[in-house]
Length: 259
Ligand code: MF3
Ligand code: CO
Image (cartoon, rainbow, N blue to C red; front, side, top):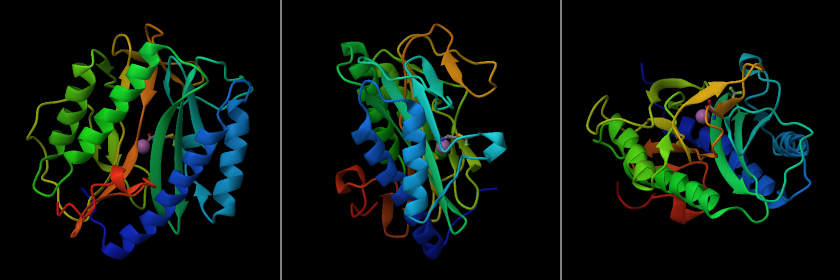
């Protein structure tokens, strides 16, 4: 069952989501060759606690860290480690925060130093897929319009959509119904309406779509070891329009467009 949120619940999710956004912005500013992903994890945890939130992933189904830091062929859910970021890497940072029992969740993929043309194109296509998906979020549209928007944008750029993971409803749990596949035909599934809050998270690979989970039981990598990118926002449908709760900038948020 999809759980609709009241305006005051969405206000609480705005708080947790804002901490997610601010933390990711700061982490992005720190990224440079030589930094370890464990250093990023420590920074994230300290910052979230100082801002009055709690890391949402730490302890979730036994996940041991605040941050997921997935480098190059790692798709999602990689553990922060003593690995040093190198010039030319791309790193996906995925972060969740909870405030007063309400969750926010977002991810970005960031270049380390100078990256290849292919890496730049992959990141741009995945970011664009998330933007298109957010434009498909409007009262009266169907859930799979979001899925279709993601798939179309990624495949139009010659990349492949990861099918093993999905976006999700979010609220008093990190993962709620509905699941949001990143592929599919338009106009299927439940109708979107005010009160729905969704974490939309396209993942795209430079090579084939297949991924596998490593022996640590968390890290997902591309089977062909091609590069992978991931972007995510927490998006609320309110009576006054659609708002991207994990965005710090107005232009990423189609609020006030009357949708
Ligand atoms: N954004 C991811 C998701 O929604 C991150 C989950 S990591 C976990 O699945 F550790 F919390 F599982
Ligand atoms: Co998520």
